[in-house]
Length: 397
Image (cartoon, rainbow, N blue to C red; front, side):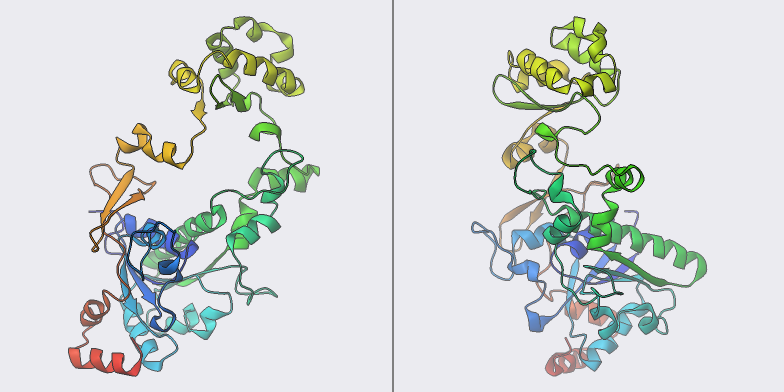
């Protein structure tokens, strides 16, 4: 029994942020009913395909990564009968999540005011680009735009280099997590009070929230943080990339106790007693020297050899590409990859959930074909075959 077994979420979602949020809930056992618009060929994520994607058209590895363990129903929310089906779904649901443009939930009648008469306990989470209010409510928006406007590009990369975004869709993914937190928070409240609510999450607000301590530095002390050499921590040293005999290693001595352990491990115990390197402030003041000294010391062994020597004593990591990261025995041997048996016969590998439930293997159901569960879901609502056929003929499902 997974912790969210029995929770039902209706998800009017597509692409990345919304599906990533409901993926977290699905992996924990929630029933996610994914609403797809047949007039628009369903979730656009179905059509985001890598050149080497082996899945049939109408599906993709991108879509599978975001939508395992979910169900799919086709539903036209602009059709009156589609709205009637939505209400029947909401009547037995805990929440409705959408990741539409900010002006769309009201138009499609997905707000708490629209749905509370059907189910006063319903929690409505709205994930948009810039929120549902204000001058940008109707603006489209995407992850990389948020990274640019929220300052991420100014702190990523080497000093003097061009602006650079984070290599992953960090804002989409973290906004999905915020939406999942919002949904669970609303459900906890609704189960206690019997009353649901609207909760709003936006890409822009999440991007700003992620500034966290860097934002506090500027807002309080006027510190306009920029790039640091070798991806260094702005305050702590050594905490950056260093050269080894065959490449790079990332070392993070983010507590004072690690400095003497590190210098003993690299064969220079005398550095631990040098007043120029006694504290974080001293080492930061002499960071260029620390970098030169550690580069020279580390150049005598390979990254793998240093990691074997440091293991469990000095916080360090190799600099991997995607292949090395995912072929890592620590990943492969500990169940962190979740294989999916796709109906096409292709074995799909996905990265497993970050939340583990001891004693319960990860759920591993392939993402559904568009509308694969429509008839089954409608029958669960009490619809007979004649009504389902009529809804389909009318273009409502």
